[in-house]
Image (cartoon, rainbow, N blue to C red; front, side, top):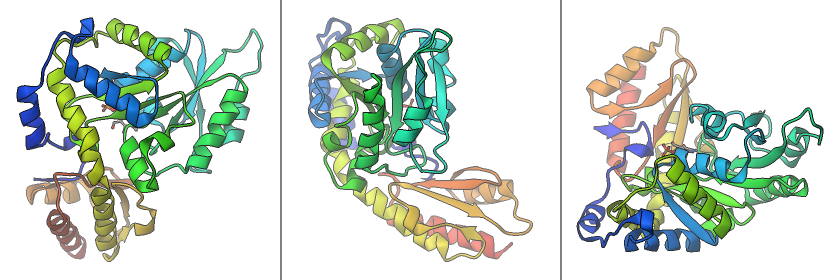
Length: 342
Ligand SMILES: Cc1ncc(COP(=O)(O)O)c(C=O)c1O
């Protein structure tokens, strides 16, 4: 199968599987797992933060950040289309008891300092207290936010005493696209979550990084959520390879995404702008009279290509370690043949 639905479908590499076999382990709830400790030290180092915590998933990392930066009844500010709002099942309200002020980022492409200032609550007993700004980089659609825009939004939040968290699920993709070290991308935020799975190919796990006292609170809250793992070193071993090695190849995914976008843009009926591709995600619209979504997706599936989309709105193609250029050519040819036959 040529699976272009997401980079979450990547399989752990052979080297990761071998590392799992031999990783020294211990009980991580006691702090005894040397491989987890090594991974947490590495994540803190690459992000330039004081400490890091290995967590089960990106969602858990974001939710622990919210839980550890806020008090029940507070309010967070974040993008209306952010992962925290759209894809975490309302966990901020359920687990942390906070409300969310949602910024429509469609106009400016990201959260601006004006958005932050407009959405911070006045100090008044009627209002919740604004305590946390949550940014994303890359944003959920794969676009990268320039560093000066991150800094400006973070400064506006800090002026009013808010903390700043970054959902950096694909943080290494942002760093590769901006051609800067990861620590540069996160230097203006208090905490960051990044995923070891997705494009970095680890089977499980994300990292939450920030100040020591924040990570100590998050470690306790991780226990509250049942996320304290025991011999987690067999997973952390993959995380170390993800950071040290797999992060270095992400530019290939970005180049492949551009290559695919370029091929698709030659077909009539498909709306796509190859210049808008910044990381490993390609978005396309199909505008052809009589075009049927289910037919299209099934046609590709029967021929070994999996894609994701929101019928009538867009299709998403994600490049990753398990798809080569030839696979993209195969997929593009099939898409072209289908569209011609319509
Ligand atoms: C931007 C963003 N944040 C957070 C997550 C959550 O990661 P997980 O699926 O590991 O919970 C994802 C997952 O795709 C994501 O795209």
